[in-house]
Length: 205
Image 1: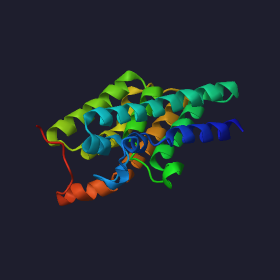
Image 2: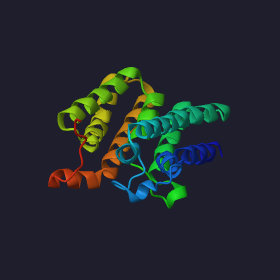
Image 3: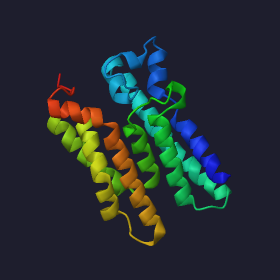
């Protein structure tokens, strides 16, 4: 029962559609503007930096809190806290990507995954992935490409920078592979636009 409780609670936490709610509070259905995505990037494009950054922070916080909540529940239930945290992380990301409140259509999970990583991994992993994201973004000004590259590099960063001892390492490594693949999959339409040269980019003002 403890595993089911972790999945349900962290999924519901992840499924809170921050971008949709923020835009809706201003009379905007974000699904009908820009890319139609409810994530922070589209909110930023449609509503400006203030609200885009706010949604990003909310989505990061969801991921971080989901990991901590899952670990707490696992400890209460006397089960493995690392596996509990990973299960909660996956459920939270799926909740964000496929939110029950919007007919299972949600964001792409980048900000929520960032929050999950903050809760699960040591700082060197976070900083290395952030560095990849920043280099790719400032080279081409494509948020999608930066996110795809960072997601693809995540398993390598975990393998190289996390202490390889015991079953916890392999659980964390395969989790990093899973969310990396999921992030790339959720950006498949962006990949098509990148290849066609039609992807939107952030331009310097």
